[in-house]
Amino acid sequence: MFFFKGDTVYITGDLSCFGRYKNLKNILSDFSKSLKKVLGKSGTIVFPTHSWSVLKRNKIFSLEQTKSESGVLSEYLRKDKKSFRQPHPFSSISAIGKMGKFITCSSSKHVYGPDTPFEKLILLNAKFISLGLEPNFTCSQVHHIEFINHVPYRFTKEFLVKTLEKKKIILKNIINLFYINQLQKVLEIEIEKFVKILKRKTKYLNINLVKVKFIVTQLKISLTKHQN
Image (cartoon, rainbow, N blue to C red; front, side, top):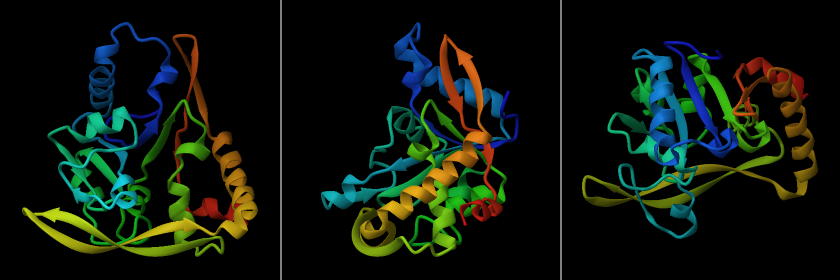
């Protein structure tokens, strides 16, 4: 077992890596119930609920209605009546459980940095779990480390986004983090270093003859030392 009652767990990945499921219609509800049972009432499930189409297609963001584009599990959990969502129009995080409201309540315009869910996850000693995918596909927390350390291959850009609040459309200034294309090679090298660190902390389970990787790591600020 990699997590216990009372844990705060950030989970993402691909459930299809579990292989065939006897009752496919119930896979999302069964997974959700099992996870809640393990973590208990004192635990918290955290997951990405990105909605990039809001930015790309100039849509109106609704905290309650805008769907997650981070996979079927994410969207299923988002619709849970007890879930909380970060008010970031296109790169939000949602959570269910004891610390859900604390984690997602953020006045920051940024996805990463002070007073954001990723900072709070680190303060809570959260566990980051990737189901079936390599960490470089799911490890968004590395961007928080990049942001607070002002890495040279990143820049921020501000957008004016339409949001629906109390039945009124409001324009909000939202900031996001992007790569500098000219330094793409440097970026790839840095990510590879980080991936190697996570792989050394990876644990494996064989479930239904399919190797499912549970990337379980306590992300510490000190990890940045390994990227220098």
